[in-house]
Image 1 (cartoon, one colour):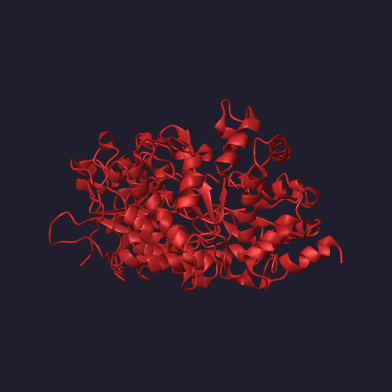
Image 2: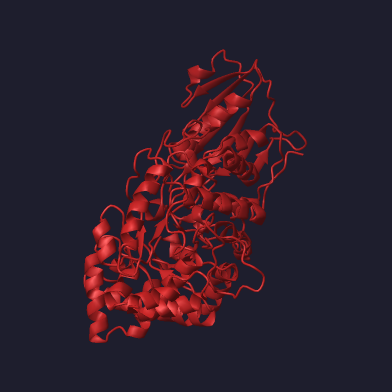
Length: 606
């Protein structure tokens, strides 16, 4: 029996203990094969031959790249299986992990169910709902052959000026901790006694989850994305690190480091936080992955002195590097660093063991290819009903009627004529927000779903006339005799630094549009946004009802379910709603806090 055959008797044996399989496989790997496992590359530059010959450990479809236009999940599965076969054709046959940012559904895929972004889920406070959403997302991701989801974001957003505010469940650490139940949905429920910090994936219907971005990304000065969080260690631990304890307790398999810095030191270079705290103190046994091109950000200008960047990040505790394009240079530099002794072989072995542990736990050696039996789950009725439930539970009613004791909602389904207006009334892309089909999102019918206008047209009585006018003029109101108006306005889609915003006014002259309608007709305003926005007192006084709908996703019927009284409003503010920009940052525990609406505020119709 050859050495390779002798090895494969152990690491390819599904009945052998995982730690024995890891030890056996690592013992027979060359340096090139180990470094290949630490490398994650982008689909658009990958070739099957490189995956095979370099023993590449992981691939990614980056958020910034256009998706395959209206490609079906089976098209994706075909592509991914081809690369997986190349990995299996390598000397040791180590399978790939393929990753994607399915942060509110399998959002890169046309026709997938798009759930409310995390800020909306935080408004529900419903841990069971989050878990069920995680399970649904896992199925829609696995249907396309993908094993690894870069979610959830467990940042605690302390400033709505941050461009990733909507990726946070709340400004309140306890709410974020509660909503980490989504990990159990994604990965499955660990059995009783499962060791804390050890990765867990239940089976082929589940995905490898990723808690991100470690740590403090929601607390940067002025909410600047990739900025600097200035705090004591005690505050960092109490506010920002606490949700990771819950993630580790649920067996989260991977943790992504943050682009941001803590007290001036970038997290990708932070040995104390990545190794001393996360791995040693907290006992995390999965792998730490870098963010997209994060190593380039460890030098100025970006990408310069790359060898030093690689040395700094790997020695700090990064295990897998999302290169994603210059992977050949990364492999060359890391090889040289190990051969020169600047990075110890023990550090490489530790990283590779962690990566292999997740692959073995996830069952990739036994089931490396896509499961075509799941294809019908993408965008299925059951998942859309779940998303609709999430929408209605996430809506926060901020105002209901101009006079006490005379509520404006619920609306009358049999009203004779209603006006639906605003930039966001019939725009599915705006309704879904960033990270939908494209990194920055887009406008229009970018996927399959129900807009707010669609929903109202579907639900009103047979004798009700629905008039849609995106930008109604004074002439629009002449002799129309509207019973009431629904005005949907809000933010255009954005992601990450593009979303950083120091003004937070309602875009597209939203306040003026609301005012022009509300001074003529009783008006319900539906605000579509990833965060609290400026609402001037005069404007709030003019409207009859106001709903914070966040970024609800594809299922607009969840809105009409509530405004017509079929269900009660349940949502509560996950963030303090400021009165003026000058108050920011403002959080519920601030002694001088004087918000427009406090954390936890939310009315009911009854």
